Image (cartoon, rainbow, N blue to C red; front, side, top):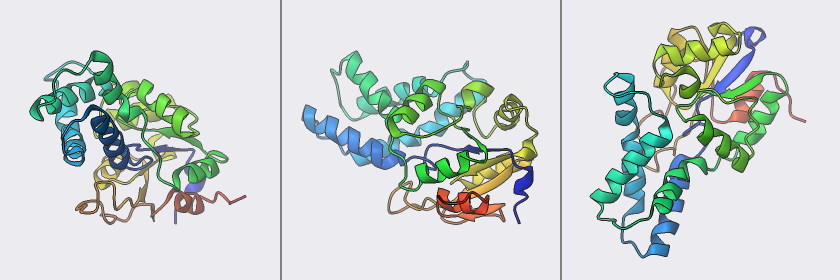
Length: 241
């Protein structure tokens, strides 16, 4: 039984949990590539781009490089992949347009309804590795009704570092046990739980495409286990209207 009377805020992982990053990135890359006449396997390109996500952040987490926001890391990874795939001659404007694909990701079909229900009773916020500008623009485009934007930039730490969870709870004037992380990733939930957060696992079985191998089930007895944000709202006592 969720001790929802003690939870004051729900914070959400974004990439893969709230939005379909893979489908969105493939769609935009393909449209751009077709317009430019580029013969690139854009599905593989999108997967490779995401594959550089954790290694790029680890350079910051480890202290091997100074603080950098996710837009900068995405741009650097994009340039590496364009070179690797033989794509040359793109303008600075075109590079920036492609980098900002991550600002234009589409939400999963259940996301907005569930968020609106939860927002009536709880503070709802991001808890993402995305930078503030990225997340604000994504929310404006997609209609995501956040109360505020929190994440790596506000904590100056990338998940799963404990500081990301602890500093953002403190920004809300809340104890960790008063905050629930909602995520489709067991490792994110485990890191949050280790510092006292409550946890909700939302199954997103196609985040990584039809052959997804991980996060196909809850790895632990999280406080909430469901397959949608509306399921989270049900578990947290937020009625439909």
